[in-house]
Image (cartoon, rainbow, N blue to C red; front, side, top):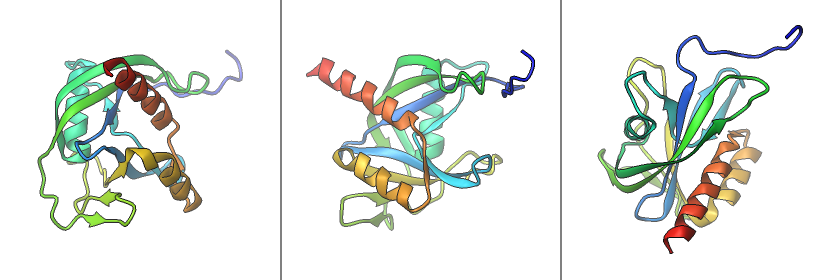
Length: 174
């Protein structure tokens, strides 16, 4: 279309978002610098699905790379476009359960509200990812995100989509 601006990835345009809540009922979130926004964002663990991967396998890999947690189970719950007017990206939202932390939690910073910030920066080697991992009590996520936004973070709206699917999955199990 003449005059229409959009981004199309040259590599893979399929990705995963991982909604992961640990046994302490804390949602795992990532803080990282996003150059297109020139700001640090708060996001769910996420990444591109490699050619030889299913969304489930990509979610397992990304969760471990970005958070230091392994999941016993990952279940894809919905797939779709994240910004259809701007990009060709498609994402699958997955819910990870049975989490087990694989790195050392000693020296993490614990905050009075129950939020925890991991001591170690995470991310895939060679990809210049310096991610801060946050564990936010599930019942405080909206308040915590509002505070982070007031401090200059950009909040990825897909967090709220993920929480909606988590709530649906939790309700279905109960």
